[in-house]
Image 1 (cartoon, rainbow, N blue to C red):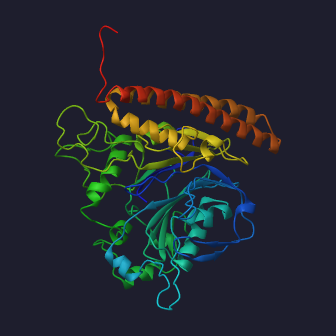
Image 2 (tube, rainbow, N blue to C red; image 1 turned 180 degrees about the vertical axis):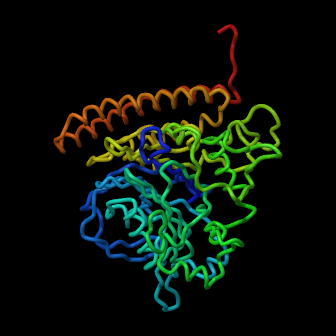
Length: 490
């Protein structure tokens, strides 16, 4: 899936939280409706079978409850995407990434081969469809998530290149697959943030640490031999670069991928580097953009939402630009696009319950709202998505707002900004109120009921705000109909 990820270390965030966030985008030419649910231990299978690859995997006996944002329609598997489990571990999977021919030739992807001419089928490896369901119910820390997923990749392999984030209150780990069975993972520095735009991202990597103490790096057990045997290390001075060894360096990356990373870094570190002009340190074409940077100021939830909704505002590449030289409008793939299906931001707060923030449909026109995760059910407005376009659920309501606002952008953008500001402020207000109540309550069942009550209030607020905004953008769009006219004598 085409996606965009940002990870924020606890000393880089405004309140000491770790934050992992990702846009889950559908392929070209389709939407993939999503819903927000809770998966209970009794709903987790004992044996998992992938719909796409047919691989079968025995699962541990003690799964935990976890939240998930799976596909709303049956057909191609669960695709749980993002979630938080009962142990307070968050996960987002996956960011589709790229590799190169040398890697894929040395360790081919494990692809499904259907039965043919009397020959039995050959199952494939695991992929985005499966990973959250196979890992999140069984882990008690971010580091443990890396270990479990790494062991599954080594045993079963994968049929695609992916990046996966794990978080808890203390740390964030980012894992990237290498070919069919190999992988590396790096701990996100506490004082930094990471941006990932569908490319192999990790640059500097300490193989010695990964194969010994594993303080900041982890990898598959035979990675050193794999690199040496296949001549993957391209460094001249001994400073190993994982991105050079395992990643892609295609011209198409400069249109589709690197520009997104450039814009996110440019937004969060506007003065640290020169981003524009003939003397720029980095441009949308740069293959050496930093994997992580220390931000110029602490990063907020709203900052994360902004960069994951961006369409190159303030640059010549903005497809909505109505001024200046328009020859480069839309030259690069935006982050906030029509094919955004869901954005999730998992906020592991140093004090208080984990929060899973959700936004559905195109991020340029939607809102991000918070939900507590220690609960038995999710609000029907978010869990009730189906294939029927309706104003009764948040996914399709967000789709309609986005389509209408895009088509009447110059008139509707002000309504969208007010919608986003109102929901953001009200969300923080509700969180602050219920955080205070939760601080005063020790009974586990009462705490759970308070969280579910807060979630229902947030869902109700969203429903009212979305309906009001739909009314406004529908009016603006209808004013642009071909047979619309005004009468001065009315």
